[in-house]
Length: 209
Image (cartoon, rainbow, N blue to C red; front, side, top):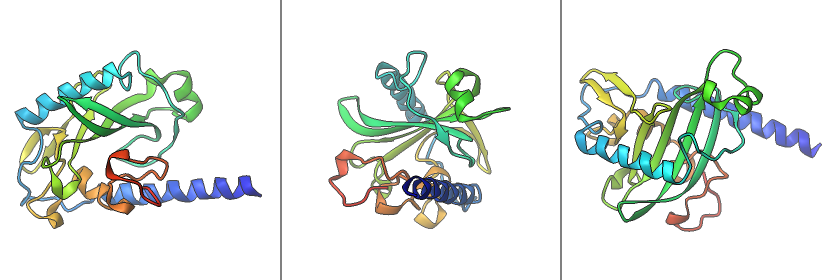
């Protein structure tokens, strides 16, 4: 009975994420949105971040692994693998969440475990930068990497940009899009959807998200 309840809760949580993440695809887009991401400083920082992630074996050929699970919603993978920890970059220690997105024909948890490289389509990372970087949104830096560490590009009404920085912060909270728009809907105010991931840098909470 207990196993059945646990399985049911897992299914409900997965469906919740699918609904929320699909909503992110129709976030307020915005011709009125300024350019909050993809600038030279963002790109440089993203490259430094990738190197730090490699050194801690969170990405790259020598990356550690965790248990993949069903995700099922764009913009992330059908199968996901998530790791989180503190990470030092430029003398700043911030919390990082690394989400590996697996897609493709016959993708499944079992097939990903057998051949991660075949199904890995992207790696999305949120890294909590120093105070003052983006206080409106918990100072998160967002980036979407290709499996080899190159940055993805995105088309917007303002043109193409590399996906690193405040994706996509609007001039006002109502004009936010992309990662920020989606993750603001996570409970608890920490922009983290998964209840088993706790950011140790923001104090203890009775319930994490």
